[in-house]
Amino acid sequence: MNRLQVLNFGSLNIDHVYQVPHFVQPGETLACTAYAKFAGGKGLNQSVALARAGVHVAHAGKIGTDGGFLAETLQAAGVDTRFLLHGDGPTGHACIQVDATGQNLILLHPGANREISDAEIVTILDQVPTGTILLLQNEISGMPTLIREAKKRALPVAINPAPCGPEVAGYPLDLVDLLFVNEVEAAQLVGETGAPDELLAELAARFPAGEIVMTLGGDGACYAKGDERFQVPSPPVTVVDTTSAGDTFTGYFLAAKLRGFSAREAMRIAAKAGSIAVSRAGAAVSIPAADEVFD
Ligand code: RIB
Image (cartoon, rainbow, N blue to C red; front, side):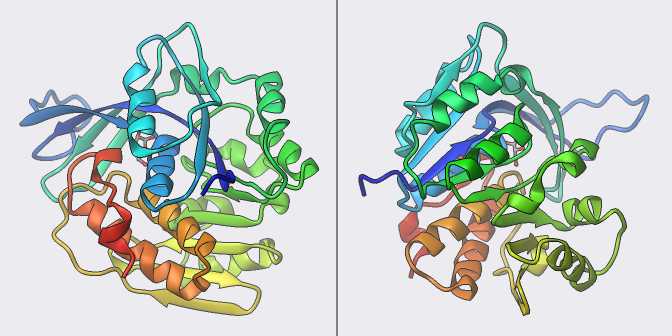
């Protein structure tokens, strides 16, 4: 596939992963039982998932002087890196605690991810063919510009507004075509907690023109578009590390849609891919290949 299908303008992080018996508590000093350094960032993970799923994806984002191995990770996965920007400071990084149950706790230093200028965004979007899907997360600077400039160029916008800080309320989400959230992010967007079906209904009311995908961890994921609503289960697996499960889901859902699968089938395929990712350690490295996922 030569035609560019997805431009992912997203983060690239160096993930420092610490295996811990429990998450460190305020005032506590805790020795980890294992440490590893991985390629990560929600953006990079989603690009790797798309590429492993067979999509022609280009990754735009910014690394610093220490981020060379992240570019190599993207290239090794088959991601097009022609739009990758290089800054003078440090690359973004994440300190990730993974506890005995495989749950994680993440502290981010944005680094170069938040040094992307509006001029750099416009220069890159000007080179992207009409119809290419613009995929976004919320770990880089320039988010409102990206959404508005994409719509001016007739690029469909898919967004996973994670992490979902208060600034997201000011983004022009009414212009978005596809929204990926987990339950926590859905509650943050809606402004109150609720049962998954209540959150989904509220999001559907706010974004009536778009597709909404809400992941529910071990309980699967649910989907809404207009009046259409359904939930798919998560295949049962032994959880090793949940890092990048949502990113894997996002990449495989988009990939399945681009292959022509229905929304329901794409949800099933994405849930399978996400469950494989949680059964393995690490972020990008845990993302399955297409032949492990597509029947
Ligand atoms: O979604 C997982 C990712 O979140 C990690 O790879 C980490 O870098 C943070 O961005």
